[in-house]
Image (spheres, rainbow, N blue to C red):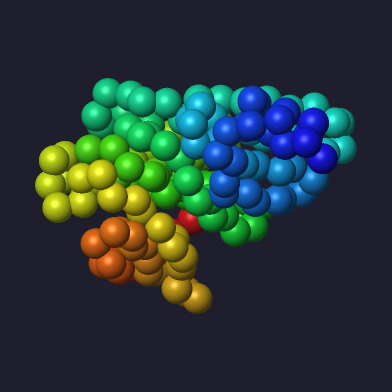
Length: 150
């Protein structure tokens, strides 16, 4: 067990946020800001940096944390929370590997250094929920265009 723990600590530090879909396992390592994508059929993997990026490019400004998705056959996005940073938010990755910022705190504002948590959808997928952990605040994002979140 200690060899496995040492390996995990070296290669996947602070691993969190794991989902499975169609023989593919997704998880993030917070410290290295990396999304790992394991193809369990082929026994191969890829990884990509969620990174720090210029504001507005849609990449994380701090550490990736929780992951949520639903049926990726019908929907095309994976949603992530973010731990810490100047403006923690909720970020999205599409099937092609592009990252977008869905919502985030104002840089240096009330939620600076906080953590976004608890992402979920309403049953009709027209509402999206997330919270700011330290502030104890729950947010609801509602679509008013009649469409559901993918």
